[in-house]
Image 1 (spheres, protein in one colour):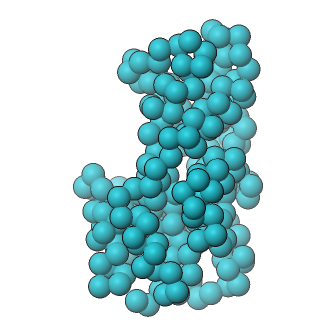
Image 2: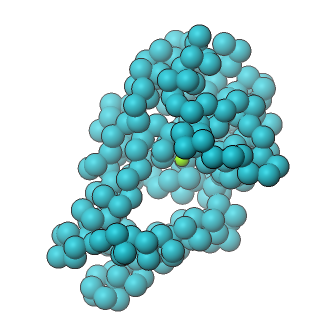
Image 3: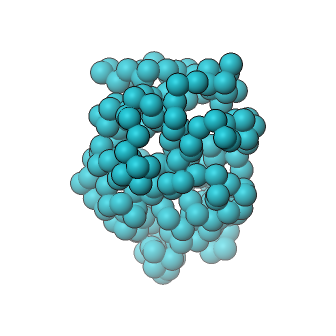
Length: 224
Ligand SMILES: [Mg+2]
């Protein structure tokens, strides 16, 4: 393996991110039976907010509260409190993707590992603790803390500084989202690997160095 460093995305790359179950769990506390239609409406608001966040047009706090504005008014509960409850619920239901632990175990001692996530500090830290992975990644780079999100290359500049400026071609960025993980890695001059579990076509103009359908395939690619 030629890579000295492997940088992983977190959500849907190492961790399951089942937002529907997290929302159901959070809303149950407020006596709301959150259903599939509610989830569809939530995503109509949430998804464009994530695009705006990735493009640097809004900040993390605006994203986290605006997506719950409707429910805040309806329930008389502050949006920030609903968001906090949601992040707690997501930490509670957190599980690793199949083969994630085996891959990380196999990479130990063979490459340095970092995490670069467009997530929120409280949730990412809680999940790393609960899965016993907190000590595995250094640095852990969280967009909410850095102030810019993938695909902005400045979040990778920040990571590379904390890594001691290794040669960029010896760093592999692995992630499931071509628009943030792969485009961001390419802009930063890193090698990239797209974890494309659903077999989607690559978006125009975004060409990863590697593409794998599973973490087991990545394991094979890196360690043969
Ligand atoms: Mg992801």
